[in-house]
Length: 372
Image (cartoon, rainbow, N blue to C red; front, side, top):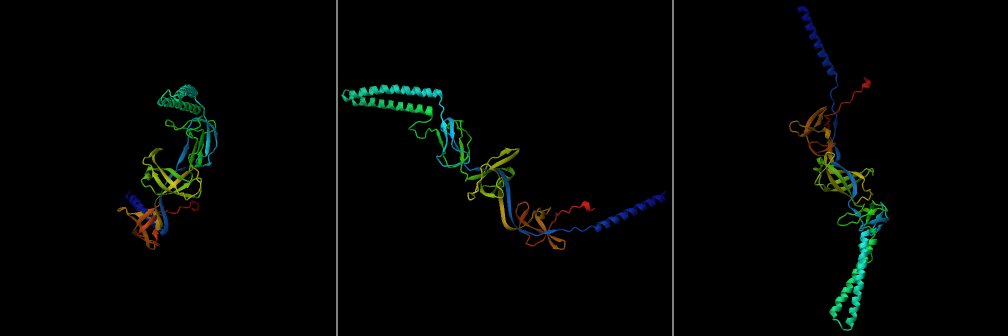
């Protein structure tokens, strides 16, 4: 029995020994790892963040009526270019029955008062000419008569205003003709003929008849995430791309960052605005969606390497690369890095043009199963 156990142990040892030899043989047959290298290149590196938004006019002017009524006629449409004073619409006044009756009664009362004052005036004038009354008494009667004339005229004008919306002698203070107050392009006409409009006053914003803006002064208006807002500042350059205008970007300057964020879909967003350069005369329609690349930093024509070539020392966390010194022989070289765009990074020191840098994290080629 002992003899069989001894033989079994010897056989097991022999099999293990032969297996180890075979493993070492196969391991020795594998191709050694050959590291590829790359050299630094001259790059223009732009570090930027992106904000989404739209293109809107810098200032929009809302044209509102100074009298309530019904739109009788509209003389413009969206897209028209207007000058200051151009006719926009005409309003037909629909008088309030109660106000109209009160104004009519006021005219009748003023007429009665005027007729009475006229009789007194003519009587006193005759007595004054005969020397019966003093000049002071005559002057008082004459002044009273003139006040009655003025009150009657005012009552008539008020009646005309209530009835028609305007009257002679008051210029453009009350007018049924609505005119442009600025020069610009009509962006929107939210009312139609027959719509009722309300005048603009201290208690009501009034009905907007048209929206005008200078389309030569456009801005980018967008939102940026709270994680990026700390990286930007006013006066940074923007590169604005409009989805509807292909293969073209517009220069702008960031001139506003909201001091307070707004929660949208669970994230805090901050509003930003950037004024587009007036040098570009391309017509951009208001409301077009756009993206703005905010340029945080820039390095033109500098020595750069791919970020994938950079390694970091586990102990010091300092960056370094491995430079080839011989056939598949590499030396660790500390480097000082500058601006990065996420793909390339500027090298300030440690690497010179022509150095061969080890691709330390290269991916092995995929095995083609069809050939096996």
